[in-house]
Length: 107
Image 1 (cartoon, rainbow, N blue to C red):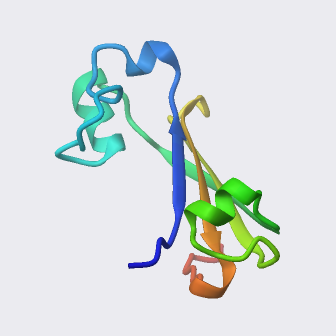
Image 2 (cartoon, helix red, strand yellow):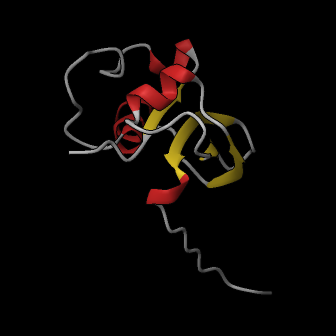
């Protein structure tokens, strides 16, 4: 089985305190649902920034790919209704293993 992504999520210490985010075992629900249920926060919107770059040697090794092949770096910032960042996730995707599609309303 070939890895398809590397993903790291970041939360403020205060937001993560009292949750299972620091426990090494998998969560029963997604990170956002977990925080919404335990911390009574509400995620309102997400901003994504996609860029391409070459991976570091460590990233290439973890993704089982040549270091000279590009990766897509997706930075995802999830905010509450006031615009406060609650979660920042950095996702690294081997470019030759991905097809990105997005649908959104105009106007």
